[in-house]
Image 1 (cartoon, rainbow, N blue to C red):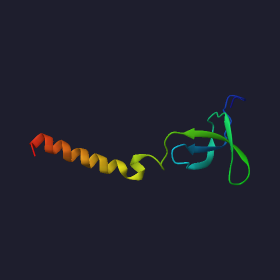
Image 2: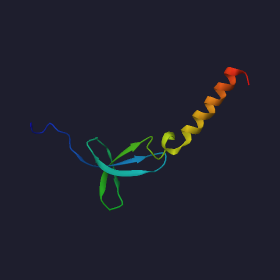
Image 3: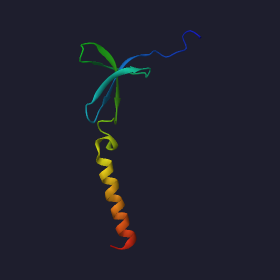
Image 4: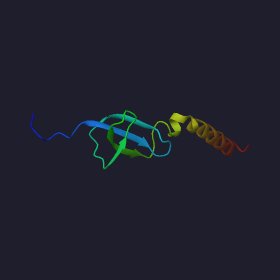
Length: 80
């Protein structure tokens, strides 16, 4: 393997800005911010707009919306 061509693989905190959900995992993503984690150490921080805690598919809200949309489409199509 060539030396000095691989990105740094380190622990990073991913934080969902809409639900304040955060997870500590390992990644090569470049970051500018840091955050103090529950264990007292400081880790690089990457803020996310959406995660499994706020995504409609995982929260169950998407299914209800799709069902309502399908019912409305049926009623428009068949005149009820």
